[in-house]
Image (cartoon, rainbow over all chains, first blue to last red; front, side, top):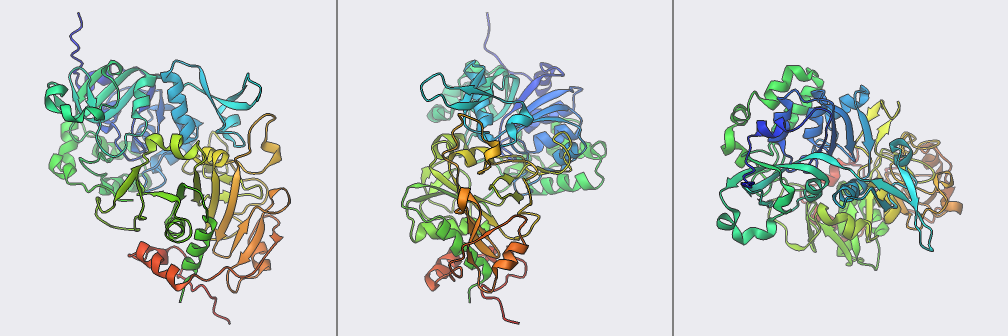
Amino acid sequence: MSTLDKRMSAAEIVGRLRSGMTLGIGGWGPRRKPMALVREILRSDLTDLTVVSYGGPDVGMLCAAGKVKKLVFAFVSLDAIPLEPWFRKSREAGAIEVLELDEGMFQWGLKAAAFQLPFLPTRVGLGTDLLELGGLRTVQSPYDDGEVMVAMPALKLDAALIHVHRCDHRGNVQALGPDTYYDEWFAKAADQCFVSAEELVPAMEDAYPEDARANLFERCFVTGVTEARGGAHPTSMPPSYGWDMGWMKRYAGAAKDPGDWSAVSAQFVGASEEEYLASVGGMEAVGALPLPVF
Amino acid sequence: MATLAELCIAAVAEAFRTDRELVGTGIGPIPRLGVGLAKLTHSPGLMMTDGEAFLVEQPVPLGPRAYDDRKPAGYLPFSRFFDSAVWSGRRHAMVTPTQVDRFGQTNLSALGGTHAQPKTQMLGARGFPGNGIYHANSMFIPAHGPRVFVTGEVDRVSSPGYNPARRIAGGNYSAIDLRRIVTNLCVMDFGGPDNTVRVISLHPGVTFDEVQAATGFDLIDAVAGETPLPSDEQLEIIAALDPHGIRHTVLPDNPPAQRSTP
């Protein structure tokens, strides 16, 4: 009988992944990214990944480290530094395949996968280069209108990685903050969804019953959970902490000088999560990062 | 005396004039200030976000402020943006693409090279394809020149325009609605035959020939006069929405609205 105990270490989670998998990464640009799990992938020998992401430093780092075979994206950005420098380097070197999508088509593809459909129709993409470059096909309405639309294919994920504020051992999650982006649909589009949390509580109903509306998706969509305090750093995790602008400037600068990932990966990934967190000042420093204003 | 940036902000506000209730999105300081100005003057139906997730009735000022220094009146996070604003057509956005062509097609994706290996990778298509097919769009171009307004087509078509060669039979293009292009030289629209680009007003001291020379495709001269200077009331609102003077840093040397005569 299953115990519903889904607790794992970050290394165990990454141990469940395989080279060649299609991996969805939650969050949006430099916001609420599951960076502790991304760093664990960067410490592993996984390779040949298809990464599906509203891209931020997660994408840049995985590209820089040569982990990415193909990227499914609508943008890759650090927001305050609009162009993600390591992603650019990979693209301009022709090092990765891409499927470039619109932001809305992207979530539509996740929803198609979540609903176990081959595609969902949309007008988005008509009149642009996305169709031909992405090999996207059209579909005609069977009703009297006969409209021809883009058939956005399901973005089926082998695994999704998501970072939340709280979870318990059974996979009851709570995501606080003003926006959870499309994390819900990454979870539902994936065969396996792994969640890292700022706080792992023994039982959500005892710890935070008053915040049950922050339960972003049901626990049946959760395969494994792990605690990762500061697990979104250097991306923002409101209301807990903002993004680390100093980190992003150093990271962007390193893409120019020395421009070689292997020379700088230790400082941006660390040999272990404990070492990484200590290197950025520990939770005291992370928790003090101001929330960005727009 | 008004600056050219402030004249552009007033022209942006005019582009956003509406009697509808819809989301007004201005990406970048001048578009954002223009939407705020429109909302606080002639177009109260406009809805604006705090740039993160909340709808505000008082536009959020530009620049540093306390995180909670805004009064949410509604909620429009990314997680429902396509449902509520984009795919419902209840939005007008003003953006600054890297390239624009005579069809109003824009490029935010990449320059040169091939799809597999672009010479210059930019942001990616972002939400441009959906914005373009579903709701009204305008543009702000701070440096009007032939590298932006290209001859021929843009390198990658990120958002659709009025190009008949890119329309497929049975597709619904009826919501493509390109409004105005505000630049540092003039205001243009797509009001010519078959939606060709016209110059509808010139900023004080600018000539049509100068605009044409800075544009990679043919323009129609439909100049009805000078782009109006902002009123004192408008300048006051702009100053309140931009307490740190970020608007003064957008155009090189922050020129006055009225060119000095040589």
